[in-house]
Image 1 (tube, helix red, strand yellow):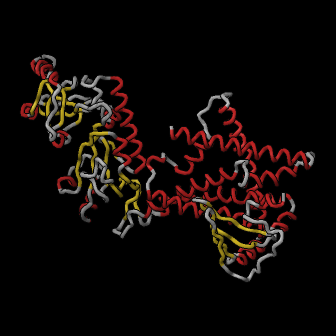
Image 2 (tube, one colour; image 1 turned 120 degrees about the vertical axis):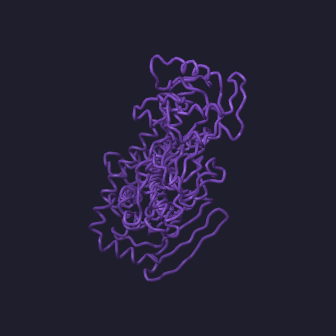
Image 3 (spheres, rainbow, N blue to C red; image 1 turned 45 degrees about the vertical axis):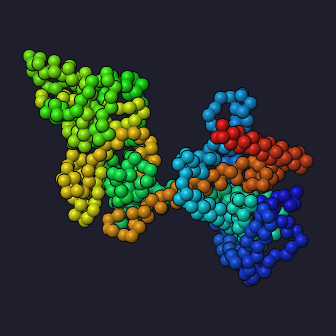
Length: 530
């Protein structure tokens, strides 16, 4: 019992060792084929004096943390029991604690995980582990326990840190005091999560003197494999999608998701070449239609690479009731597929109910008398999307862009070469994931200034997720984690239960929690592999 309670804080027993001299600063290390560490006593004296000086306040602080950690351990234990019942087919649920830990760590699907994200995880892990161990150290020093050393270690491929204390002094503490020390790490990780969430909420206000937010998302990077690689570059601004004004990176994700859902709905409701007024159309002048290259729809031929396929929609032009000749002409055009230059067509007036802009404004799909409503033929699974962008090549372009973006119909900055509009035809998700955007625009040209808000946001985001994962992981009632020490310090509070029964109950909790967690972890791996 003596060594196991202390195992959470140190890798070796210290019952026969004396305290290290507080004024000695040294480094030492242990190296083996599977484990290596680096120990230091440089912080012994500062941490001990700080903990003793503010011991009254720290005890109140960590007492609150004790209540929070016990509630978290209780909640995680209930989830484990629920998952065991689900595994035994007693209940139905889509919730998995291992899946929760995985999603908490990454914050999104690991399929889009990049090398840069690995760097953010390493930095956030250092911050989260340091805060965790600092909690144990401050709580111990507030109780009068001196630190022997602080160590960082690498066990196989897993990094970590620990704070070593004298085990005899730790065992002699009252149970409530020891429980405060055991719960301090989880509490500090929860505080880090709250601090990161608050910082992310206040970040626009903090960066306001240097950056503009929610005007237009700025492109930070475009993958060379991206379908947008030839059209936009880092430093460009995304103005609109399908005529819908885009203000930040979150709106970019929301609109692209709506476009994907809309495309899938149209494909489910309508046939490939069936003409309907729920598609995206353009009011094409009759003169341009007559000059276009067209083929019979039943020929199933394709337009040349530089041209796009269009078909007439049943959205009839505005005309008088006694005008029947144009109706006949319109019916004849439905037998043809027209091959037009998309760059010329996207500048024309929109028609049809497939446009999000028109659908939100409740506009009519009718065109003028001398024009017909033509819709692009969309291949199943591919989306026809108009993207308007601005390119501030100079200070004049940047100033003009900010003046004209209030109206996305303004084409002045396009005429000066400061932006443009192009059509993307393809999978909207591949387009979204291949472009990295930021919602912030620097007020002045600063080297690497465009990337700073994105770096801060990602660092806060990953630190939040890693700290939350550490808090949940250490709340599990399993061996070798904080949950073991917390249970061992909490059960003796129930004095009605004898020491032998408490020991049996503790062993049962830890063995059951470890087995269930291992079972769910293996199941999660098999689901990912299969």
